[in-house]
Structures are given as structure tokens and as C-alpha cells.
Image (cartoon, one colour):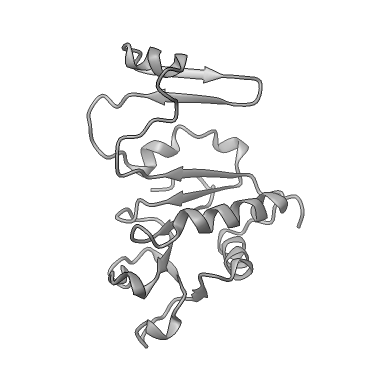
Length: 179
């Protein structure tokens, strides 16, 4: 799945578990270490990053199959999918400039096989994906005593961002320019 040597690590969980919240805490810490991080997020619905009434939105909706918008600070490419099917992670990785990254963090794509940390909150009433998903390399939870006794992978405190940051850096073997 990962044709490059670049480490890829996912955060997989049921909706409402806190994947985005965790990543919003983790990303600045990795960046502060000097780690160049790219992200890929799976959306379960139709979405727009541009706003109705803005030129890029209007041009895309007028028929542009690819719409690139750029400024001095950033650029974004919106591409209409020729077939309405769920994209595969390995196809999306091709769109990133991997030469400018040290690590790719992935939110979602829980059904695909690549290293993932499962976020688990038993109060949501959803089952664990581990051990059925063999690509889960750790579980981050707020109630570790709710896990089965036979867990053979690391268990992290979902609320301990220091421990999660350390685990990510160690597993992905990234240090960044700050150490």
C-alpha cells in the first residue's frame, strides 16, 4: 500500500470519537518539533472547500473538472471525480508532494490496510475494530479497563497528548529538525 518510505499513520474510529480533535492537538506539537506533516481526511459526504458566490466555486460548478485556486500563501486543487466512488488511500497519496513531507497522518479510511491507531470510547456503544483489523498498532481510549484482557498492542490514554505524540514519533521514526 505504501510504495514510498514515508511513514503513514492513520487514526481510525467511529464518528464522534474525537479523531479531528486529537489531530488538532497533535499537529502543532509535531510541527513544533520540525516534522513536516501532510494529512489526508476521508469525508463521508459531499463537501466543498470553496463557498457559493466565490469565483472558484462558480467556475467549478459551471463545468471545470479541475479548479486550481492560488494566492501568495496557499493553493488548492479541487478535482471532480469522474466516477462517484470512494477514493482509495494509495491513489490520494499520489497527489501529495511527498518530497516536502516527513510523515502523513490519515483520518479515517478505517477499512483500508495500513498502520492505524484506533480511538475507542466505550460510551459511544460501538465495538472495537481490533483485533479484527490486523493493521491497528495501538488503541487510544479514555477507559482502558473497558478493553478485553487479551490486548497485545500498546494502549494509550486518549487524553494524554504527550504520550500519543511520543508514540507517533517513535513508531514513525520521525524526529524533525528540533530533535
